[in-house]
Image (cartoon, rainbow, N blue to C red; front, side):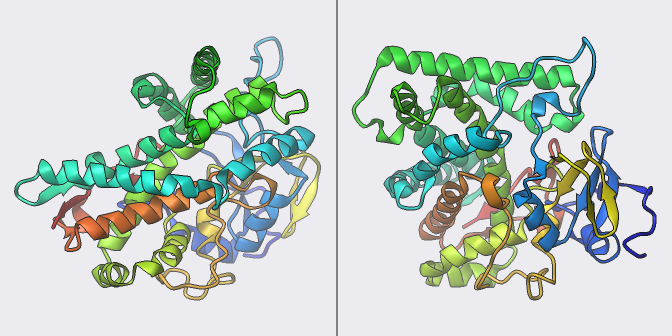
Length: 410
């Protein structure tokens, strides 16, 4: 099929393959035959799916393509159109986005995050100690014991979220991550609830004032910045920061950690080599970020003007959906892309997007995954799957698919 054929054809977004985190096989055909194609999205809207690495990378950096407000897309006209919520960091544009990113980005640099390494190792060790203590037969499920609690504990200690409030903010966060099945009213209700929680949390911290050791509390640091006369943030920006971190830094890390550990456990020889050569874990993390779909077709951009790509005319207002999971399996960008190669270098994956909206917390995700693997292999060097990978059930409640159980023995 040529690039200009079937201009009006609308396909379904490729469904994830059973027992997998994504659908690389379906996207392989699109990369070859229909690199830019209209598709029906899970919410019933249509958007242009981009599946090739070059196009995905370019789309994320293209100023003609902007992220819409989650609370205002798809657009609704007339009196029933609801007022939009505060933009998350992913949705900010122009000077506002540049100012906020310039202030927040240094907090998530490799060097700045070094203070978290001992604490992440300690959290991982505590969780594994508790798992082992509760498993006299040497078998356990990694998902509830390790995969689920670790990212939330790390997020709370880095950002300054109270772990004890998790029953308040997590239901709203999880609702938004499954937003394709929600009405706009439900999306707005969850967004407003998260904003209200974030605002209340900030008010608590304002009442408490400065605390010793607050360098590990990013909310306090950003709140102090918002109070400076020439600071780069407003109080609303700090509210948006809390909402953004909950939406982007919680469930995605659980999903990817579970999938990454399943991949490693399914490659016992590679796991052994990592145990014997822990210096290789950094490169392994990059390959796991490329190999394991971190997100499927859930990156919505909107065209600000008409443009043409591979012969397809994209109109102003059309949704454009770059798919990093497909781009990261593109043979035009990666040699033998469907093979797990934990020594792959270079590895310019787009798991965290690209351009001005590249994920701010990418280094935190890297640090967390690397530490999770390292501590697991240190504490349980003989760890292996206790059941065949093909028989494991999957959590399919959101687009962030992951194994529902990871039974292991050691």
